[in-house]
Length: 338
Image (cartoon, rainbow, N blue to C red):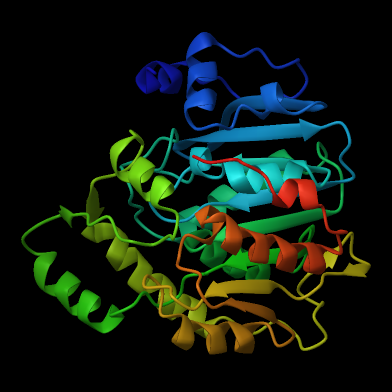
C-alpha cells in the first residue's frame, strides 16, 4: 500500500461524476476495511479532497441508495477516517449516507502531523465541509463524533444560530484530559525547549486486535505529541467554558430549516476511560446542553468507536434508541474487525 501515492493523487471531491477508484486508493480502502462499495449493495464510495483555507481535507462520501438521512462522522485526535469502519458499517446498514473526513494533520489531509495552530481552524474545516454538502445529501442530517471530534461538534452547535444537524451523538467527548493540570504545567515548562514529545500508545480500547493494529499496522499514526496542539487545547478549553449554553428547550441554537428543533445531544461515555476526565467534563456538557441525554458504559474505555463487540452492542443499542431506529440484530452481530 503506497499511501504517499494516494495522498499525491487525491483530486477535488466530485459528486457529479461516478466514482473512479485507482488501484492505490482501493488498496487503501481495503487495508482499513472501509471498502464498503465492495461489501454492501447500493453503496457508492466517493473519495477526494475539499479545500479549507490552506488545507486539503481528505473526505469520503458513502452514498447509500437506500438512504433517507445523512450522518457526518468526526474522528478524534490521532485518528482518521480509516479507523471508523465499524461506525461506517453501523450507519450504512441503518440507511444513512455517510460523510467522514480527516482533520488537518491527520490521515490523508494536509497539515503538520497531529497539530493545529488554533482550534478555530477545526471550526472552519467543519463549516466548509457542511457548506460543501449543504444541497448534496439527504436530510435530516445527524452527526456522530469521537473525543476531539465531540469537542469540535459541540462548539459548532453552540456557536451557530442555524445548523442542519438534527441529532448528535458524542462518544467520550473531550474537554479536560485526565491529569490536565500536570500536563498543562509540563507544557508550559517544556515548550521553551522542545516542540514535541514521544507518544505513548495507551490501552484505550478493550479490543486487543484494534490496539495492535493501531500501533503496528497503521502507517497513518503520528508517533509524537506536538506541544503546539496542547497549547491550542488549553486556549480552546477557556473559550469553550465561556460559550453560552444552549437554551433549555433544546432548540433555539439548533434549528433544522429554521422550523424544526433539534433533539438535545446524546453523550455515550465509558466509565473506564483513562483519556478524558469524564467526571469533570460531563457536568460541563450538561450545563451547555441542559436537556443532554447520557449513556454510561461501565466497561467502556476511550475508543468507543472501536471497542470489543459486547461493548459495541451496548453503544449501538443506545444510538438506535436515540436515533429511533428499530433494532437491527444482523448489523449488531457484524464481524467487522480492523
